[in-house]
Image (cartoon, rainbow, N blue to C red; front, side, top):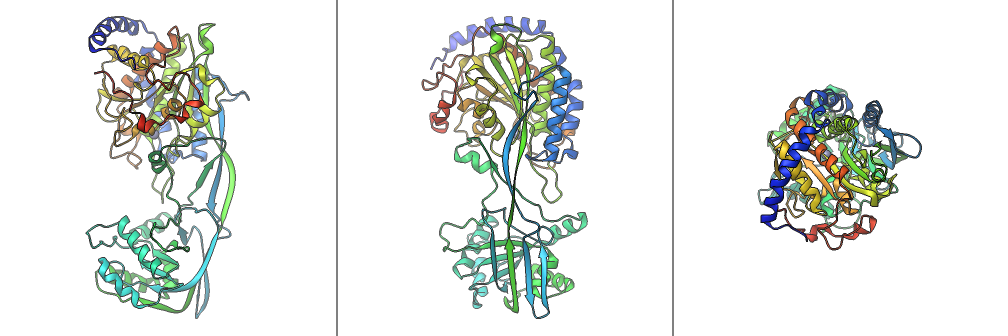
Length: 558
Ligand SMILES: [Zn+2]
């Protein structure tokens, strides 16, 4: 809407450079934000010992407690009605029952019973309890070669039976594809032939890893967050959620089809061989020698999967710095980040140092700086939970805000700030609701001199980052928001996202920049003007109906 013409931008830029350079030189706070101050915080919050801080988990609760204790030590106040720093976000957790689930092999020599998660698992926690029993067919090498050879497996009647396969490198499809699509094609074929499920013996190095580390299969959790409306565009849901269990290809016949994985001991029992014999069988099939499929005569497999359900909470950490102006202190700048990350997978830990211990630490440093020069407006620091589960903590905060949302001038969201270009940073969202937010960043940057990159600001950009962090729920509430973001690396969501790789120099600059913006918007005479979208003129839940992926707001002035 109210885009300034280039000539006026140039003039405004020249004037504001001088003013802000002077302002930041006078800033007592900005000099308190240093790499040296932030490093010990990041070494704790980004540590492997916190096991990825997944929501909900004990380790995330420890991280939250640490943030609350530090917030109090710095001098921030609690804001929740119960006088604490914690906003409890309720969540219903469903897991496969370790007590009531079993896999039983019945053969000529009697029956052997195996347990979850020691011996078997099934894809995802699923939605409802199930049990199935039937004979079993060993697929041999028939399903590991190219698809035409799969027909060899069909000489045996598969109706009502489990098909047992060895997990080898995924079969190639006739079109040359592999992996997911091949396995989906395989499932479709087996369902068409009337099989009731597929039992996969885990791949040999995976079996060895589990054995060596003394691990079981992971106990995955299906989460249902309560009292929160996170209705997201499909792309966000796909990025955050676990795949639904027993998902059937659209064209597959009706009827249940179960996907089960077994360790080698249970696999050997199903096949009726010793572990040594199983080893030789794997060698043979892996060596591309043809092994004919066979009916596992006179034995059957019973599987029962039950679920346990509990309701717990996971915390947003909320801390408050009262504004210095008696009139403006009833308005708020919300500075945020997320403190959760992802759970371990079979012993692999994803420390999430850049994503997003880094943003959590930047907030502590800003809080310290603001103790030296309080802005006129109050500042609320929110460390959100369950961002990785679909921005849940941020949605929960705006929907259960301890202050009126129409009094929140803006949300400044840190999520990943320590990697990539040492002198550049991506800004996402500044142009979307208020031209004043973007201008504030440009003005503040006159003294910081980072390259401000708007590559990901467009909701239509293929990565769709606009929808993928905690500023988005605020923006959906009509609150101007920004995601300050360094971009992804090959370590994103991997074991390599460790504190040792943090660029503290960059972290210092990015944090100082955002601090200056927070001070600027915290001291302005009014709330940031909503002057970009005609349909968003007031803050509040009613803006949730704005469809962002189609709105295509104007691109930023260059
Ligand atoms: Zn993140």
